[in-house]
Length: 403
Image (cartoon, rainbow, N blue to C red; front, top):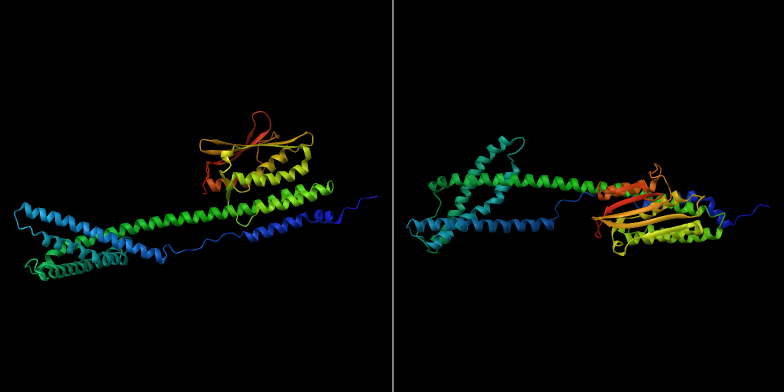
């Protein structure tokens, strides 16, 4: 007489693919592909701070220039035996420097309005010539009026500083040179900023691309994780219903830890070990006393940063390779060591095959994630063990800081 299977057990057995598909769909809807947002390069608050810094920088620069010109002129007059009127010379040189500083924003605007680099530079150069003369005349006017107000009116010196044609003509060559220097410096700074912004944009796009690739790999891994754990449950549903029911209860705790809402691409090795313990609880129910797992990880390495869901696929692959019915034990060993700034994880199994199977989603996924997160110098490989079996070796940067 055939044995009737309990209804609740039969329900679990008849819908594993539906459960996997449902959970996979929910996971993908919770983690959609990130779309990079366009953010302005400089928000208004930062722009105001930047303008304020530039204004103070221009003030200190013009003050320093005025002091240098004053020292040079004052010492020259003293050395030449001329009357070195200290206060008058100070006011004249500082007023000249500050008057020029007031015109710098206008010259910068003109430089950006008609750039003299790239196409149309000859036309821009022709346009700048009258503006150079105009700003020179403005500087002479401001310079003369400020000296007249600060020196002549208070009676510091009996000198008529009001502008004249001769004063304009004598000052024009030096002022046009200064105009040209401001234009050249502006273009140099702008070209540097443009190049730097292109580099930053490229880095941001690369970061978005890397994160999108990692998210895609994570979405690939999560259904695989569910499939392997549910597959372990399904093997016991008919043969050991009570054990299968306990496995389902433990699977709930495992999934809660594995797919928490606040997911990051990185976690600590200690957290990965906690997740691995939950997974091994399920495997112990499956293999009974045949399962032998040895974990050798020093305490000082347990806060090292590793990719999320790294250990479970490695150990799962090792268990599948070691699960030979002809052997009394299903033995797996996990070792972690620090080696010259690297964290080396070694998972040993009883298989003589040290290749990564084409269809091994867990190992291939881990290998790709390591490459995307840490670069080509780190990775995952299979190699023959020293005595017997094979090892899966993972090399990561040894760090306790978030990347």
